[in-house]
Amino acid sequence: MDEGIPTSPETPGDTVPATGERAKEVTPAAPSEAAVDTDRDFGLARPGTTPGARNVREVSEGSEGFTGSEGGERGGSWGDGEPVRAAAASPEAAQQPPPPPLFLPLDEPRDGRAPLQQAGAVAPWERRRTRSRRTLVAGALLLAVVSGAVGGLIGAYLERTGGLESVQLPQPGPPPPGRPPGSVAAIAARALPSVVTLRVTGAGEQATGTGFVLDTRGHILTNNHVVAPGVSAGGRITVTFSGGTAARATVVGRDTGYDLAVVQVHGVRGLTPLPLGDSDAVRVGDPVVAIGAPFDLPGTVTAGIISAKERPITSGGGSGDGSDVSYVDALQTDAPINPGNSGGPLLDVHARAVGVNSAIRSADDQDGPGDGRAGSIGLGFAIPINQAERVAEELIATGKATHPVIGITLDMDYTGDGARIDAKAADGGPAVTADGPGARAGLAAGDVITALDGQPVHSGEELIVRTRAHRPGDRLSLTVERAGAEKRLTLVLGSSDRN
Image (cartoon, rainbow, N blue to C red; front, side):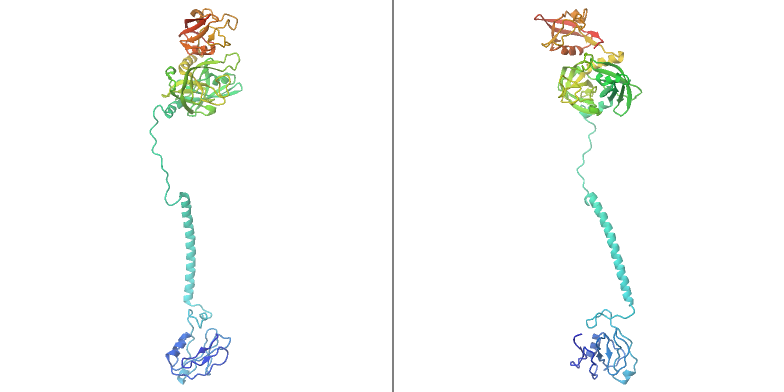
């Protein structure tokens, strides 16, 4: 301390020096509240002392303890300093036993210094406070761990759900019960169980096509050019139904002129025949649906309209001798048809087959409709079902199909309008078969047929196509030009099993 400590209120001028000098002797005065308060200011209680006795404190330099004066014996202790003894003011006071050691409260400062503590022992309340602090620390740590875990769980939940409030976008209403009759979906649903995919291998070739079930005996109608590789030695035809069932198939009959074939599977139950419509009743603009396996994608459904009727087309001709050329008086459609659709059905709004998809015209075709490997450009052609039905019945019954014939040889190099009868047959014989249908009708070599049943004929291929749209025995009306004159003849079609 920088200043002395006042001894009492009665002697304000007397102080205890801050150095090691002995304190001045002070004559005791009558006790007063100030003296008692002074002792209390130092935290001392004086039980056992008599009134009028005071202690004069002596501070030794370098010591934190206090020493009594007036020749009293040293005794007791104060903190870590020297012994303290109260000076006796009277013989009675001197004869009293010394007071027990007193200690400052631990939580009260002593002249601005830290509170004093008892050396070598810890108060019970201090131990209780230590345990309380440890309990508080442990509780705080546990609370932090639990809070962190709960917070992590809540954060994960919010991240997954996007918040406390659920987010639900508008939901669709209940689907309508079925589809309207005549819709593409309704047509496809009825027809798909009857449509099959054919995979054919043989003669170093592979082909994929489509067909449809004709009856419960396992007869399936398709194109001849689809099954042609499979008729060679070691050929194989596999039929896959819409439900995934696969079975081997054998060829019942086929015809290159009509480009039609019938195959049959055995041991397959639950077959669903496809109903057949009337191709003669079809009108241009009628909606149609095509089903097939374009590029080996089974069950593909496309839709369009009938773009034209009685469109004369020829396809094939790869053999070079014309034996594989087919002549079709076709239905034209813009329903997308691609390689793999061949042999599949062209359906009307009642899910009835009105045609057999057979050929398309693609951008890279130079000579006419073919297999169209480049893909559809909206020009597809189907064999009318009325013609296909007749041929299928004959193929199932006999393995062969009959062709209606006129009994003439045509000049296929003629470039004029109409179909001209050649001067002679390919074998050098007469161009008009003796006693044939044409000879009986009055046709002669060099005649130009310009119309059939009132419909113009512009070429030899068109005359063949129009003729094959009929059955053997049908009666036809022909318009003929001969030597610049026009004549009308009536002809009854004959029959031949040759192409």
